Length: 122
Length: 108
Image 1 (cartoon, chains in turn brown, orange):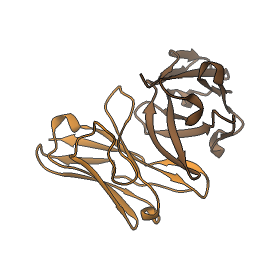
Image 2 (cartoon, one colour):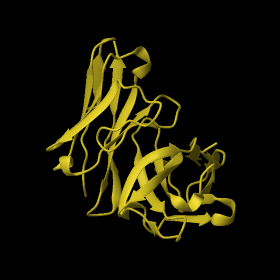
Image 3 (spheres, chains in turn orange, blue):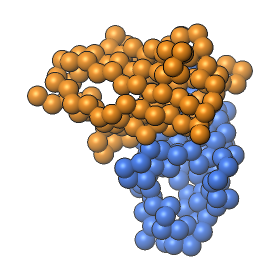
């Protein structure tokens, strides 16, 4: 079964770090990019960046640069999102998502993880 | 950075046709993807590359894209179509992904 399965919910203190995992199964992990998308309570979808599981290359929007790190372990088909110096407005559901690549163009998000709620509260 | 603009809400009666727009500068030159999100669930792809449907998505869902506006059209709307809908593109100038703000579809 083709799926992305994420780690469980977390509660963090402000200033702490979070690390969420995303295990892929049912397809070749290195054939698709993995993106992370978050959604704050009652808000829309926010793209956080991508990792190329084949090369390990990453790209993050400026908003998250310096605080976010995306990594992967190809031996276990798992991607990771780490976010540091957490603030209350980082409280959100974090999704890992799969996309293909066509002639340098990132394609649609055709497979989503179930989401991981991270709550940041003192 | 590239911006996508969606109406916050759209209402439609059952059996009628709903149109959800997504505005962006020369969006007609980009591939637009649409996602449906029901409460408490992860988003689901309903239209990709402007007008293609993934397997399992009803033919009632269709899309178009021209000029500065892309549109998701839902025909013969059902109560189960009530959800939030998001458009998304890849902005080649920044190599970044952009989402619209989302539209809440209410079935009256």
